[in-house]
Length: 292
Image (tube, rainbow, N blue to C red; front, side, top):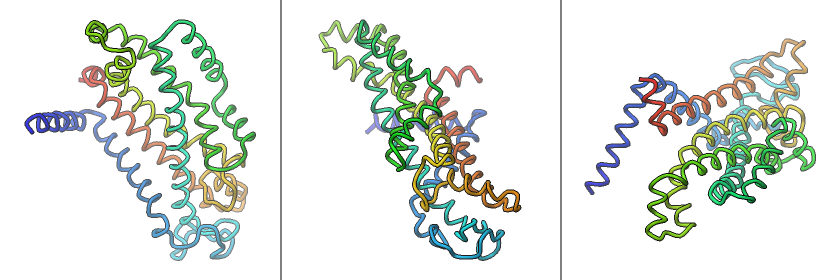
């Protein structure tokens, strides 16, 4: 019990120190933004005033009491589509980052720990993928796989898997020569035990930080794919698709058709970026010490 109190007190002290630092407020704001959008995604069916896929008013109605964000060119409520669009954005982001980490992390652990010819082969393959511009590669894969949440997530995951591989492989290459790893070998620990019990916990903070940063990138890539018509199929609410659809009516002064989907993308990406910055400082004491 005393041990649990000590650990909880230590974590609480770290959190307090974080919020006393210059990035504490930024971290809190980023977390609040993420909680807000997660709340929207979970309770979307109960929050939307109208069905986001059906016509509920005249085309391109400006914001009013009946339609707070106005309507699009097909008379659909923009507010309802923005709320439901959070589901697509977060689903694709979490799914793509999860798949990328499941591919890149084990390969990075294995490559960095084993080394030799296997390491060279993995590095060559991942560097070849990493050399392509990310968005262009995602567009090419999405065009081959076709529309759909899973296909978009797979195309984005293929782009980000080398990032996890490179970060974990470099961390493992340096950690495996530490004294505690040598001590584990000396007491007769097996190779898989050394990898999972001694090395993996020490590279885990890097995985968490990269994951939180890639969530923001994944949302932007998903919006870009949907803007180009490679995302989910209409009339499914999607921020990128609504941006593409609304930009055609800018000359008609229908600014609300692109303003609110665009703000949703900007704020959620900003939330992930702000939160990942604070998380990086929390998990890396050297950064905190450098800012004091």
